[in-house]
Length: 234
Image 1 (cartoon, rainbow, N blue to C red):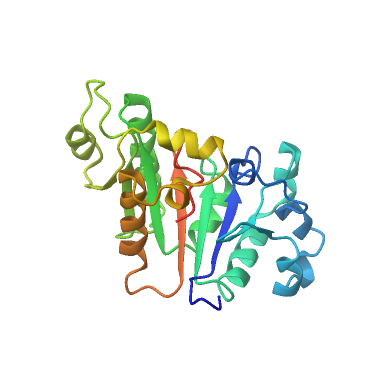
Image 2: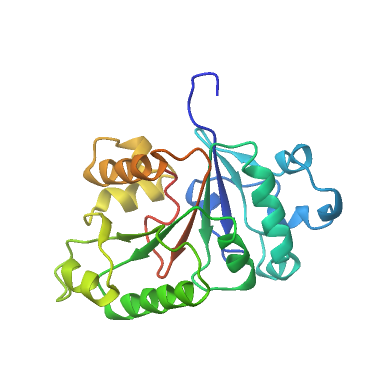
């Protein structure tokens, strides 16, 4: 923070199968599951001890084993996010691909929502259902952003097809790139390892657009399909 850089925290809310830490080749000593026993008197000094440090952000890791998911209550999620947003400039929430109670409660603390789609019919259908669910619950209306991953794949479905099916514009289109998988497998996000890459430039622009005029932003990313972008910190 001394350099003036924004303070960023990534919260892995894929509580059963979260992979933010492993994607960054980190082995967390602590996870969000350890906040359960301290829920009644949880504060930042305690929460801070559960964070795992990466070179440019902090991470609140998902439970190490899937059974840990059931111990993390929706109320705890809200409490954690409210505490974190008092101490970080930006919070990125990486969700599970489903609307479980924990994810729905996270939306109550969310300012901007990024939905990730690829050019295949099952994924587009899932994103459409997600949008209808958000509509029915009046969540993040006017603050939803469609990110199209591998947007240049020639698979018979085009970005314009996706826009018309979902009735919303593509905010960010990421080209297909082996460099993304390479960066992921080396544990260093492409925005850090190759900031000049077209994928990095698109992600950086998205981050800048979302942060413009916003002091506290919680970006809940509801990824409807496994994606090489899922764990890229902005």
